[in-house]
Length: 118
Image (cartoon, rainbow, N blue to C red; front, side, top):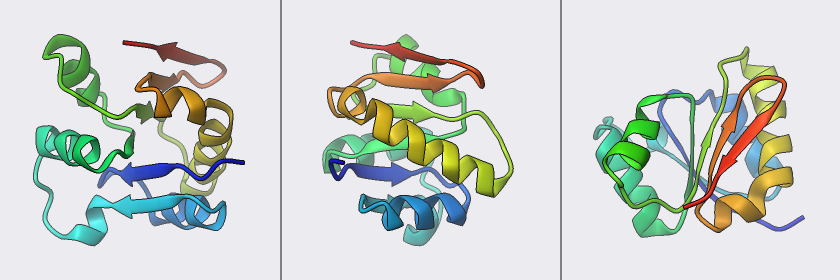
């Protein structure tokens, strides 16, 4: 499994960060950086650092698709309890990591996954 560079939005549970780090990924978290700078700044930071953004927030779709904001890949997860979210994030980073790394927007729809490439 390839190690991925990820930035976790402030809405992502600590259990997800712990799991992805245990999987060997390079994980940074907005929560660990202090105050929330806002969605546009989070997406910009992820891009500048070459990290795919992991979020539950649907607002990032508008930034990417409506506003054409630059990004280094986005994984938008469906809300779940923390342990289940950690498992799902881990599985999707493994199965769709190459697409995230190529700048895709990967959306967890529950039973299926949508991948939108630039």
